[in-house]
Length: 260
Image 1 (cartoon, rainbow, N blue to C red):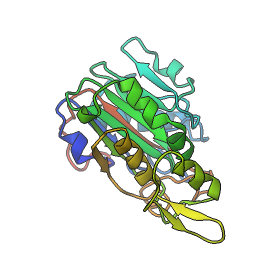
Image 2 (spheres, rainbow, N blue to C red):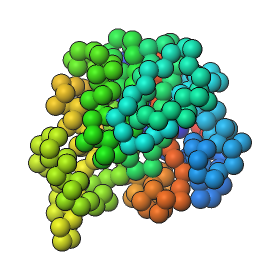
Image 3 (cartoon, rainbow, N blue to C red):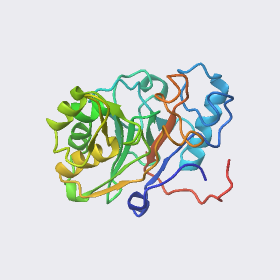
């Protein structure tokens, strides 16, 4: 099996999910190996094979995994059985929701935080791309509004992203985050007027402020763990993208060596 899972999301029957890393794909250096983006000069055939492996791990059919063109905004799109995967890939948004059985929604990241959410009755799932701009700009709240469920029945997980020891930011980032939630414990002083901020913790705090109490932070730093994750910051933009995805289906019964 590839990637990591959230114990909370894994406890919901009828929901399959996974936070994938860079291990288990076909792409050569510097995208080795499980690059899932067609927009980073990787060979299209290799990316297609990598995405097929992602779908296999989730347990969904060809053309059943949907993504969007991520723009660090707050738009969330609803995906149903009539949606066209290729067309949706050119739609600007940063969140996807589906209520259709057998469909998966996913986001690509290389330092930003991926969020996967589900209702505890497996009636809907959501994938969210949340860099700091999206997090303070309302993408998490927009996802919850689109989900339109009692927060008490929402389960969420924040996937691997840039860690607090690596995410050095300017005062404008701290100020904007402070305008959204209490950042006590999420910000540490850096050199000069710089600070270090906990992006995963920020996303968790926004979810909890909205009333979502069941939140997993699965851990992992995309910058520090170069063998496991792509990182835009570490590799100065010349890197791949990992996928985080969630589906309304029963997780497949896979052995531990599949594509290892």
